[in-house]
Image 1: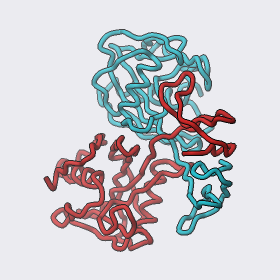
Image 2: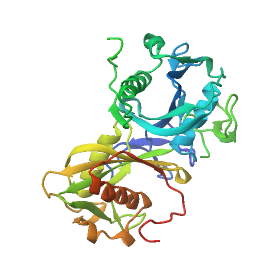
Image 3: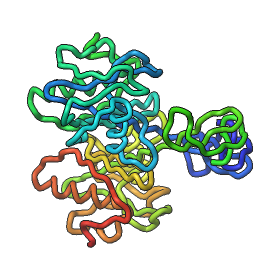
Image 4: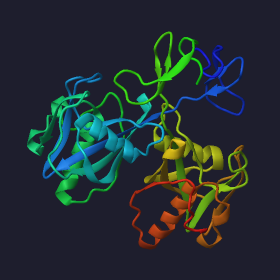
Length: 184
Length: 184
C-alpha cells in the first residue's frame, strides 16, 4: 500500500495513537488503513463413501487436487460462501451442511472454515477453476497430489471421524513449512 | 475506495473478466482491490460459576457489557487474537481455551470466533477499552445491557451447555435487526 484509497495522497507506516501496531496511515486525511486476515470457506462434499475433489486449473497449485473453497465475499455468511464455491468450482449442489473445521494459517493471514455436506445425487463437473471433478474412495485419495495442507487435514480428520461417526468440529493451526501427516 | 492504493490513480467499480462481482479496479495499473469480511476473535472467560464481562468505554456501544473480542490481526491465529483481546480489554490471562462458537454476521461483513477459556485466578481489571471488568453469576448477567447480539448468543449457549457439560461448537448466522432470545 503506497497511497490512500480515500484521498489518493501518500500513506506512511506508523503506529497510530492508542494503537500498538504499525498501520498504513494517510499523511493528508489521516485515515488509518487496517489490513486483516481473510476467511476462506469450503466444503467437504460426500457421496456415499466417496469424497468429491477438484483438480485445480488455476494457480496457485495448478494441477493439484483440492476441496472446493475460496475467499469469503462481503455480504455472505461462511456457509453461503462455502456452498457458492462448491457450485463455482465443482458444479455441485450439496445438502445438510454442518460446520466441520476451522483452520488458522497465521503466516499467510488466512482462516479456513470447512463444512461437511452431502451430494444428494452424483451430479458435478468441471468448471473454469477445475479441469476435473471426481469422487474418490478412501483408498484412491491422491495424498501426494493435494493442493494445500488444509485439504489433507480436512480429509484426514474426516476419514478418522467416519470410523466412529462422531464428527466434532476440528480446530488446528497450520505451521508452514507443513509437515504432512500422510506423506512424511 | 476512490483511489488505487498501489499507484494512486482513480479506481472504478466494474466486474473483472472471469469474475461475477463488482470490484474496485484501478483504471491505470488494473489492480483489482478485493474487499472481504473480517474476523473478530474473542473469549468467553470463566471463573468458577462466573463469567467475565467488560463494560465498553469506547464506541460502538459505549457503556454496554461485552465479552473481550476484537478484530483479528494479520500474522496471528484466531486463538492468539482472542487471547490478546482478553488481555487488552480485560487485563485477564486465561487458560485451556477451546473453540466454542462461529457466528456469521453477513450484513456487516463479520465472522466471530469465540473460545471458552478459564481464569486460573480472579485477576483482571479495567483497560483503555473497558471502564469496568467484572465477574457475573448467571442471575446477575445484565441481559438488557449487552453490547452485541453475539455476546448474548455466546452467553445463552454457554449457560445452557453448562447444565449438561457438553460444549459442542456452536454455529449461527445473525440476522439484523436482532431478535433477542433473552429480551424479547
